[in-house]
Image 1 (cartoon, rainbow, N blue to C red):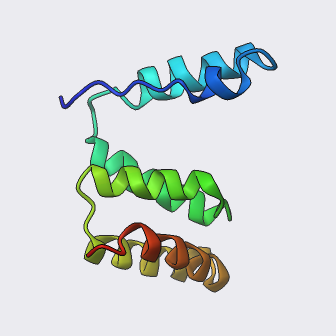
Image 2: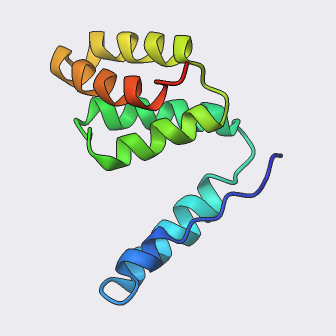
Length: 109
């Protein structure tokens, strides 16, 4: 397995307001699910990006996960194909929104 994924955003942003949610985000989702070894981190990144696009979550969380996908080996060509394929099932406007963000994340390539 690659480097262990550690997340503190839940505690940093919501720890005082919603400590249970912060725990679930940081310790369960990122601490356990993202570190589970049955599928690669790159595959998890792709699944997450597709899920966010499909549900219409084209906010900063999609940007974060696009950057994470790039960091974990998803190429510009792969993300273009992934978003195109997802668009056929999730909807054209969602694809456009995702492409605007992906283009910014991969602008150096």
